[in-house]
Image (cartoon, rainbow, N blue to C red; front, side, top):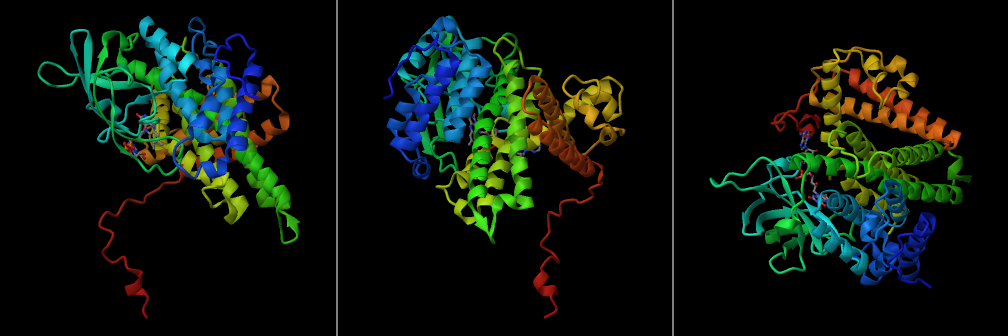
Length: 506
Ligand SMILES: Cc1cc2nc3c(=O)[nH]c(=O)nc-3n(C[C@H](O)[C@H](O)[C@H](O)COP(=O)(O)OP(=O)(O)OC[C@H]3O[C@@H](n4cnc5c(N)ncnc54)[C@H](O)[C@@H]3O)c2cc1C
């Protein structure tokens, strides 16, 4: 029997986590069949009620407001347990945690915190973040949503789309730029807590989207014209843009929590299937290429584990992460690529049976795909990683990649395995496509460092050794790409003389 218990502040974390595991397992596998549930949009109320009844989001709430104190290792462990059952459930918790509760705990007024945290603790409320606009996604700093002050209220107006939990969340963190007297918008961004249950704060959902995956999470386009009290504006320590960076980097540090459980599930499903399925008289597990894929999944699991251990000690709200772009971007971009690869690999090993929405692998492909797009598109993040590296190398007047990485605290242990690969002079004028490849390379080296650290903490040696070997192979291949001079240019008017049919000579 599952008992509702909102106040679980003092409960040992392993009991709290086990309770959450039992509740989500019961909701998704006993009361409902997740494979069937996931072919329909939305989350049945009884599933959400059961999953949320143990108050999982209390992990994010400070102790003085009755929560468990916002310890990052607890949050990551919770996200992982959730994503083993359902990536959509984990993202729902992740949105509430990193995009709403943590920024509120760090930058909110006491009044706003008291009111909002109380609603989370007692009434299982939800919160999300609206940044993206139809005309401004990757270039969010140019957003057109504006605010102006009148009396003790801010009037916020604009259009936002693709915010996770559209039409569902009780609270929104709205982002906007201040409108000046001449009508222009200031450069800085501000954040406001909007409570859709209050008069004057309702957000109109103009359209719900037919999102390709993550069926349980609603997305759509929102029209904003709300009035929010002054005390519900977040207080940045310096600028709003620094607040935004601190928030986004902290969120990127926590992606490994969602990735860990998801990849573990892909791995467990793959192991079970390849043990049980026999093809041409041989168990799939006995084929070398299948083993190669399984080793890949185990390496991804080990990398996600290493990233979780790393983030646990760095991503607390007491730390200012606004300057940690290099590490945060490396973690987010690489671990989300690993999530997508894991789902693709499982589907390959299972075959046609997995090419269904009702199969965890098939669904895994569409559910994990947007992780490579939201909160910083991976192409952009990889190229930003390289921008940061090139900038630092120029500052230190160091052009040899090995010599530079050997002194960087994020990579100095990993370089020991990579000397012969990295010992070359880096061209500081690389085109963007090469900057992306360099960024991919650096992200793998930073991850290798985390894997070495995890090994030193006592994680099992065979997984660590395999993962270092897998990473070394990947880094070697990426360096090969980087050193290959790619002279292919886009042919925009490609239609002329490009019809094979007229050239077939028949
Ligand atoms: C499932 C899902 C959930 C989301 N959740 C939220 C949410 O909760 N809150 C929220 O505010 N938003 C959310 N978003 C929106 C998301 O953050 C944006 O989609 C993302 O920022 C990209 O913006 P865009 O889609 O407008 O693409 P664009 O900005 O038009 O970019 C499209 C593509 O162009 C390429 N590109 C862009 N800039 C560059 C560059 N400088 N160099 C090289 N290539 C580039 C990249 O490949 C990029 O993917 C979500 C989106 C999805 C799909």
